[in-house]
Length: 234
Image (cartoon, rainbow, N blue to C red; front, side, top):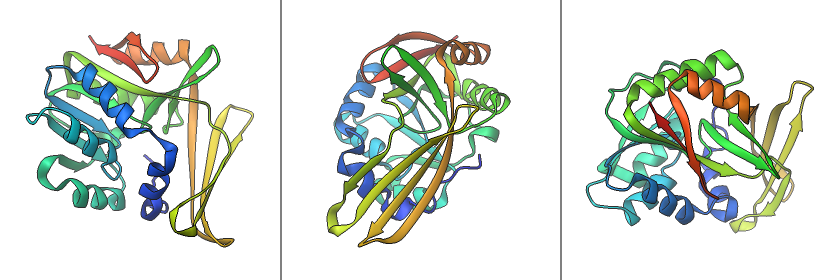
């Protein structure tokens, strides 16, 4: 998987906890959907912010595994989570995990849902449809039949500009090409000096096309709310 948060990882927590996500809201929504099931996989664990909230708010016997392909993010996750979570360096395109999970989720990770008015899309870090099918097939192999895939719901990609603690400044630029592919540039600055710059690309699949891809890989839409979309592994 080509995109990596390596350049932004030093400032990732600072950006994400400054209002980018409501981690408690996501954690409560996830736990409601997990219910009595215990074997849970996070796709794109990052620095462990979501996993940390799940452990704080969820049952003691929750068995959480987190995967990511960025070493610097995983290093921070290990520092935050210790041995409370099984952390693995995995690329979703050649992921090989045992078929042991009741629930898998992605909160702004490999995949998530973008909604703008009455339209929705599957947003993916993988640019090619074939790669998405490969990755989703790998995921289906790791989720037990009858298991659940949960994808976070977010608003459209837009420009962002705000101050961060410590006098730093964060900006986010978004560009869309003729094929509808999105590029996001993230900048962390200190008095006009760029401390970090991260460029990531996304592909947005219109929901009908996304549902067909997911169905071909064994995931069928179940239901949604204002926070998560739920798919069932057949």
